Length: 114
Image 1: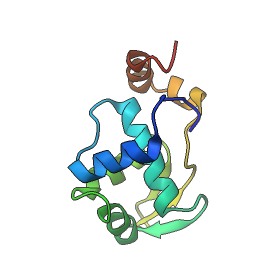
Image 2: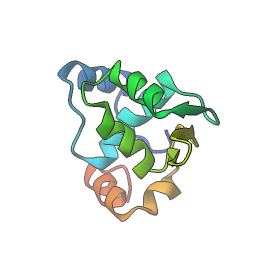
Image 3: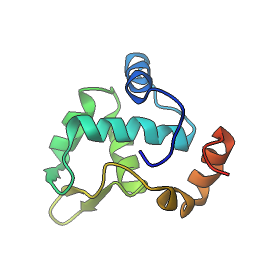
Image 4: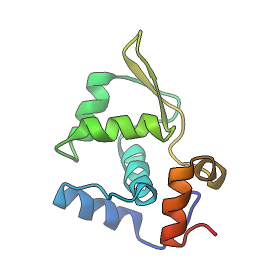
């Protein structure tokens, strides 16, 4: 992960997984999404909608929200004609975060961006 969230990513992911909840803070959500990508997906690979949903569903009861967030934050490209997801990256750079005003604000609230 390009940003240092000053926490153990695996432990944070497991805590979210066990409580079946995802942080409301979008910057903290990146911690969960990036750990999920590392555990379940390969950069450059293409997966069907069903495959993505099932892989996320192995960790969280509501996989559709996280599947959408992967697209919204730019980790994944969705081709609606082929009904497939291509994994673009498993980590966002600081520049990627700064280009998203919502993420920037949340990252600043956490003190991970100045």
